[in-house]
Image 1 (cartoon, rainbow, N blue to C red):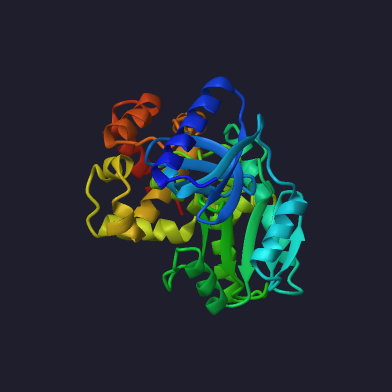
Image 2: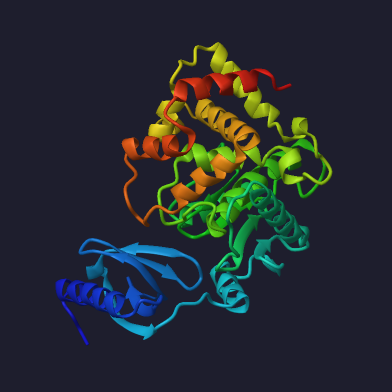
Length: 359
């Protein structure tokens, strides 16, 4: 049946509204988006947007009038199986990479580099252990977690560009909340040289994002302040956090690179109240990213080490915000002060004293 785009958009919005009102459980629909058939669960809709969570974990955001041949297929929603997602990944990558599965991961990697899969699985376990120990409420991922490890920088660049997110030269890997995948490239092949150390930092940081957004630490469909997400990512770069079993001392939990960067930021004239600006918006991550990442690490480390229960409450508060809702500056501040109190000057004084005592 042929529909005009306006009529199709109105019909799709009506289907979502009726199904959402009459079926309180999660439900599934089949829709053609630009010639591609997608099966998934509507998470939100309006006359301008439909947010659809596909059964492979990808988030689709499209205008209702761009959809055709849509219908409800089920009164419940479930992920594709690991076998189905593996098959889709093989088709998508044209079998250019091998795929190895673990308990939580499907990792596409160069031939003979199966060790990548266990690295991701080990990091998952480290993240879960740390989150649980700090009182963060977590759940099992709804989808198999996917990581793609390319064999070279050119392959990585081509793939990133094909996904609509060309990588800057200084970007070694990334986690995409849209695709729900980690993508990077093999710089050192697992050797113990500097290239592998860079690989190690990249995989740890990006895998932390992926685990946090898939276990409920962050809401993948809500706005998480950058200082919070990147603070956790940079914190896990320290060996005492991701490899706590072998490095149990606090000194091993310190990310010394980020600590040095923060102290340089202090020496260059960091102003009092800088954290309020970081709380209120993400602008500093564009205007002064080195300082923003360093300060994000410093605050998350300080809060998890000195106020773990309050930090867990704050993280849960942010994660419980409604999907796809704006997060204005005033609300960001009020969510933080509701947990940590209004006297941010005193908190910052304690923070600076704590940071000064690290070695």
